[in-house]
Amino acid sequence: MEMRVLSFVLAGGKGTRLYPLTKERAKPAVPFGGRYRIVDFVLSNLVNSGIYSIYVLIQFKSQSLLQHLRDGWEVTGILRHHFIIPVPAQMRLTDETWYRGTADAIYQNINLIEQADPHVVAIFGADHIYRMNIRQMIEFHELKRADVTIASIPVPREQAREFGVIETAFDGAVMGFHEKKADAPTLPADPTRVYASMGNYIFSTPALLQELRRDAEDPDSTHDFGRDILPSMVGRAAVYSFDFQTNRIPGDPPGQDPYWRDVGTIDAYYEASMDLRAITPALNLYNRHWPLITAGYFDAPAKFSFDEDGRRGKAINSIVSGGSILSGGEARNSVIGRGCRVHTGALVDSSVLFDNCDVGRHAKVRRAILDKNVRVPPGDTIGYDLDRDRQRFHVTDSGIVVVEGTRGRVEIASLQV
Image (cartoon, rainbow, N blue to C red; front, top):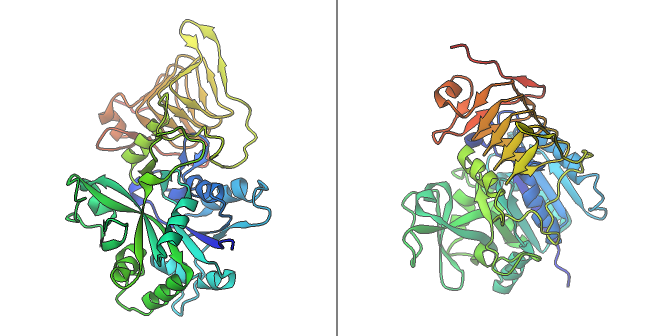
């Protein structure tokens, strides 16, 4: 019997810790890796795993996400017999509320589950950078005859307050669930780490429907899977943990470690972007057996112009996206988005440029993130004088400079000193 799988992608979070990159867009719509968006990772994982019936639940600042889903996922033709459909809050409740939590987001769309009548429902977040063969998790779920299976991974103990932390038995049965508690129990064999929920779940459909209705009737619930539903199921239902470290991707070399990053902060986002620069990157974007799917852009190839002393277009340990021209300028250890220009004598070092940025002649950009459409004037510097940068831009405690963009071209005014 063929397994019927329905998937919900939770893409409605505000992403406040990733501000100002989320000032005008939802977190899943934040660019990553030059030509992709964060949401592309979960959608590609689902499609590559053979799961094609997908609802994307949206809420805050969703316009850029809707546009990307239209451009990248609705016109490619890969889903002729199935679907990826964005779904805003349906306001089916009597008080007509927005999604009040992750569980409420599914509950407000419970009719979609009832209509599809799947064997299992995959509920996945859209906030993380990772590759995952979800079929392996479903097979584990079926093997254990679980009511719910939680994808899990060890993380440093200091991050316990950011995750749901799981206690498991030797066979993966969940014995305890601690939502975002700094004093959550560590791994028995490693006191420096905790076993964290990745926010990805496989539910058997009858169990999910029962728990959603139970939670909706609880006036004291926050209607969240991590805070309410999962802790309440431990001890009275078959709750299992799937070890993400055992997951393998077709086409990856033997011994390739699974990759997963929570890019909830500017620093974490920057570090994940810098992971792409390596000769053998931990996150492999070049595996043709497990492609990362995105919008089908009609960009010209990237171009590197001039070969003169002081005027040589080149990129070293960098990713340069389509339509970009390094016209006598240089990129080092950087990720360059689509349609960017780096002019004569300019240097982009250890930085991330979103689409359509323009770095003027002899300007220098270091350890910075430039949002879409930013223009750096000739001779200006970013990332070299953080006190000066703090007067103009957002600067993290670790010294990452974030230059906000808008829908139009952004001119950076030189600071008068």
